[in-house]
Structures are given as structure tokens and as C-alpha cells.
Length: 317
Image (tube, rainbow, N blue to C red; front, side):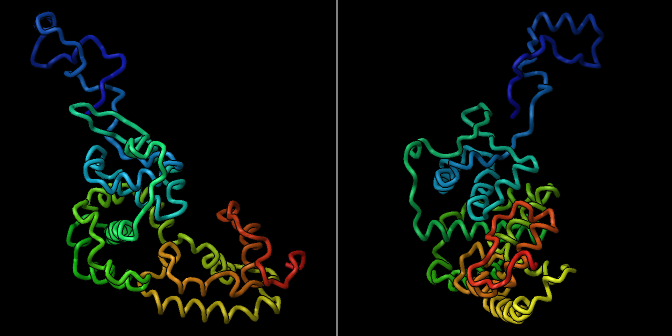
């Protein structure tokens, strides 16, 4: 449903089946204002939005309520859940054109708002139960699997294989019973959001990059350092001695998480601590220093210059 124009024209486009005299005759009789008969030139397609960053928890809690959810663009709740789960995704989506404002349907009107939360949370910061968190994780897993598969087919997101993977993930984070009971969003189909994301290549790239690397920046920085560093820092004895440690820790975490390895950081799985910088402080220090100065992608990466436990000196690097 398109929004009314602020300055509608006073005439409707001429019907090709009429000559000019006939058109003016009917125009006078029916008072064609252009408000409903002419498609507004400034109208936009109804779009989802992600709201204001300070309201993300309020919006997330509100979108668990089917009645509240029903007022918004079908994709808005899914984006809200993803932005809450994945640090950095909200900023990435805004950078490629996703709006803060979302279409909201009230009666027969179609409006936009950046207030995505229910009025009862205006002055209250909501609390979340473990079951609510698990339900949001389940919805996001459906979304990510659908996005990765490049399909919005319900078979993709509701298959037995997906259910088994989610159950295994819940067990791995100590929520054994939530494999089946995390169903607060079971009737909210992830399909519309999957289709919306997959139909926009620029958006799809952002979701994949942020989701697969959330809370795993140091791991990817060290990997890039080992693959690309061409200076003497990679040959420092303290750094060299920790490379086998890094490889052992990486193998351990991959065995524990399997297909969920790339999402281990955001899931807060205990085993992800094995890839903490403190496990290989000299290697992590050298990698962070190198990445910030040699790779523009990491120029804004906030990390300590010295990882606690490191013995190397930056001027030597």
C-alpha cells in the first residue's frame, strides 16, 4: 500500500482510450484529485527497518509477541533478531542502505516508524528468559541456513536435518530441553526474510560476513597474518613458538563445534575460549599490530596493542 503524496497533483494521467475533451469532461464530474487514482511519484515500496540502536532490546522483546509483530513488515522482526544476536550486523546493514524506519500497517493506512517496540517498554528495559533466547537462536538458525542455501523453501528451514542440528547446538550450550521447547517463534516463518535477504546481493554479503565472523575477529586476524604477513614479525621466536598452539586450539574447537564452528563466538560456546588471544598472546599481539597497519579492513578494529602475557615489543615488530 503506497503512502499518500504530500503534494498530490490535481489531475489523473490521461486514459489513452479517451481524447482530451472526454478526459476533461469526466475529470470535472468525478473530481479526480490524484490521491488514490494516481500512483504517487515519491512513494516507496514497503520496507523493513531495524530501529534505533538504543532500542534493540526493547524491539527484540516486543517482536516475540505475535500481535505486535503483525503490525510490521514481515521481514522487520527477523532483522531485529539478527541484529541483536550478531554484533556489528546493524551497522553493516545501515551502511548498505537498510533503513532504521519500518513500514507499519494500522487499519487501512501504511506508515513508517523507527519505534519498533511496544509502548509498555517505553520506560522499562525488558528481561529475557533462557527459553526466549533459545527461541530467537532457533529462528536465526533457520534464517542463516536458508540464506546459506540460497532458498526460502520451507523444506530448507524446517527439515529434520535442521532440527537435529539445532538440538545438537542446544545440547552444546547446556540447554538440552530447549531442542524441542524453544518454539516461541515456531509460527513466525523465516521464509519472507530469507527471500528478502537473498534477493539483495549487497545485503546478503553483509549478513554472511558478519554472521560468520561474529566474535571471531582475533581468530580471523591471526589466520590472515599467517597467510599474508611478509615481514620479520612472523619470524620472531616468541611468535613462531605459538603457531602450533594456535593450530591445535583451532582443530580442537572445530572438532567440538562441527558445522557451527563459524558461529561459535556468537553462541558463546565454552570451547570458543580455546581461541582466546590469551592462549597465544605473542602471536595475537603481532597479528593485531600487523592487521591494523597493513590491512584497511582492520583499521577500525578495537583490540589491545598488547595482549596480556605477551613478551614481544612492538618496535621490534
